[in-house]
Image (tube, each protein chain N blue to C red):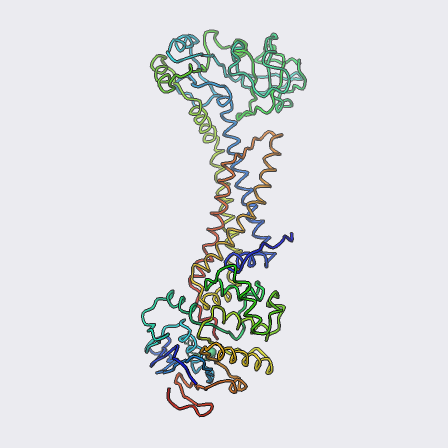
Length: 236
Length: 384
Ligand SMILES: Nc1ncnc2c1ncn2[C@@H]1O[C@H](COP(=O)(O)OP(=O)(O)OP(=O)(O)O)[C@@H](O)[C@H]1O
Ligand SMILES: [Mg+2]
């Protein structure tokens, strides 16, 4: 069921600092995110999950190994080039939603559309359409402070979907939500990823997320250990 | 102070406007700071321009194309002397249409009820009227035909102890009668101008009858001012020939520099600018630090540095526009109020535009600290 590889990591290593104080946060990580596939990344604290997310999200350049986006190597790209790639290919969902508190729900989505150079006159309609897809169309005119946690996370997901990126990276998207709400949010993300043929990677501690994942990866001490959810083969 | 929110589509303008308007207290503090700085700068400019105009008021209003002045003249109020026959020498120069003698000389004014003041007697030929009083409020220059007649300004009625037409005073122990009032002719030296005929001015100041202080030259139609000026300078010894604007500027420079007024005013204006930069810088930086996580999120979802900078710059520019609006209004009221006082203030359009440019500069300079901070922002901080 897995489609083309959108993002590939080959033998990626990240070392923070150098000399005696150097920390190897990632070692020899091989990983591919495929279209239409939901991946859950688990791992104890300090295992390197955040670091891996930063490398995959083109925010951090690895110390060794290679990252390929749509088959193109990212080696030697400048920070501003990486910023442009983030804009074009990625949607991000954060643990604490990271909505702009002074903007209404639809305007939060609108900022992402504006960044992606959607024509000005289409922004409001497109933002409202995305919010409606997440079941909160009627809340478009509210400020984040007037929304519940689950509603905020839905706005954030709508913002991540703006401009139809193929890769979605979510960092602990349910950690700030109660169990049922968290489950609902992940269900929506999974459905959208399948429907839009996106690669979705979720970093989470939440065991209830597992049931929505097509595969589960374990990170331990910077190394990837695969554990298949179902009958998934041990090799990509 | 609830104003209708402008209709803005999502983008840097909306972020800038909302960042400002969602923080009322800080916005008010910023606007008060900017307005204060605008008033500070504006008042200094208005005083400086008002002083400059006052310092050259005789030159500006005497309606001469060229001034013939004694060598070494630095301003119109403190005059040297020259023989009156220079007038006939000047008249013989081709291109000269008319030449009028013009007296300017300090004297002592004795008030009707005792006490004395220093005044500047200005004497002009009644026949041509050139160099005479302008802006008459009561009486007219023709009333100077009355024996011992003089004209003073209403602004100095108390100072000179004269409140009605016809009152009699003494100038250098000689009788004088006030036959007219002008309206708003200020003096820079604090010695009020007293307008009278050239002959009477000579008499009051005990000036030799065959001498005067200045000659006012009008050109014949079509005459080249440069050529006439050159010819006059060649023809007349021991004098200097100046264009009107040139003499006005020389007088302004002299008074503003020798009194230190120019430097003091410019220093105060510069201080206003610095205060403004610090206030804008402080409040904008505080707001930027508060919203650091939002700027990091913008970077993470793909905004480049320019996008973040535009948000900051638009905040600064918006603050500048609003603060300038308030500040220039207050300055305008101040200037209007000064019309009736002893201190002249003037705020011509060019100085308003200069103030606007300085305000914008002030806000952009204040924004630099925030912009510098944002170039170091790390989008990875959005993941924990
Ligand atoms: N900027 C940094 N400088 C130095 N060391 C770092 C830095 N960021 C992370 N580390 C180290 O790298 C290792 C991996 O950190 P990372 O944040 O990726 O773990 P994590 O799995 O996200 O942990 P948690 O579940 O607690 O968020 C840790 O040992 C951490 O101390
Ligand atoms: Mg982490």
